[in-house]
Amino acid sequence: MNSSGGDPERTPGHPRPRVGLLGTGPWARRTHAPALAAHAGSEFTGVWGRRPEAAAELAAAFGVKVYEDPDALFADCDVVAFALPPDVQAPLAVRAAAAGCHLLLDKPLATTVGDARAVADAAAAHGVASVVFLTLRFAEPTAGWVLEQAGRSGWFTASARWLGAVYPPDGEPSAYADSPWRKAKGGLWDVGPHALSVLIPVLGEVTAVTAARGPSDLVQLALRHASGAASTAVLSLSAPRAAAGVGLELRGAEGVFRLPDWSDVPGAYGRALDAVLTAARTGVPDPRGAEFGARLTEILAEAEAQLGRAI
Image 1 (cartoon, rainbow, N blue to C red):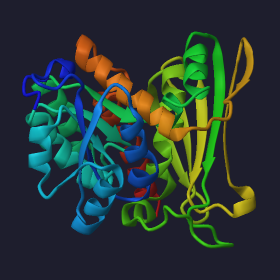
Image 2: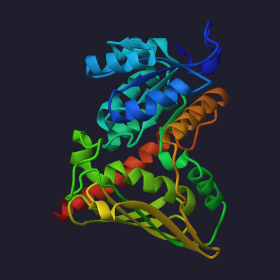
Image 3: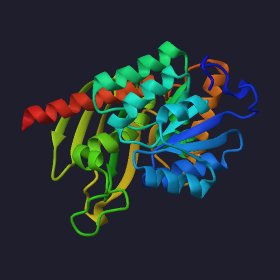
């Protein structure tokens, strides 16, 4: 274990930082584990899951150790990758940080402000690096596109839509539908972080948010940003199949700019791990870390509170 929270590459006897995975669901099987196994700069060490049989199966598939206790995994690892529901992730991330492990977190960081703040505070207190895997900020060409747009000025408005068909009214649910937290919290919490992860670095901090409810789990956010620009985001996991899709458009003094398509999510996850290792090595916090994740939770929690008051 890298108990000092310093450079994971300097762990005695281990030339490469050791990474453990918490979680065994579809994302863990299809994205997290393959990306960790393929990462040339680290060593995929082992898996822990809430379902021991699933953890054993996933560990066997990648030839790594299965752990019965997350704290034992923390003791053997320099970095911990999370593929867990947000409110399971948060307390375990606090424990991992206290054990000196750097954190590769999933979105949303948590669904309560207190839990999200606890993770960010633990990372800071124990001097560990953290990154929240927000797909658009690590996939290409979207990651480079966001940086390019953040360098522009004169923004007027933006519109984002993330309409998933995880629970479509006109067909079978997707492979990711068997997720109690996702079904309970809907598009606001599952895909809202993706939209915000682009809007905020380009248009500036959110200074005001208004939320309105639509059909099924659809939520529309109206946002005001520190730059003075206004944006909207329409979010759902229950769109009809023909209506599903993702898009984001920025408009300002320099013109109209549209989010490009992206692919290779496992590759994006590998770049997120690169970002954790860089932050650990340099001591410079990544802007997509737990502090940013906590801010996203604050915005989403405010929107959820407004929706609750509107019922």
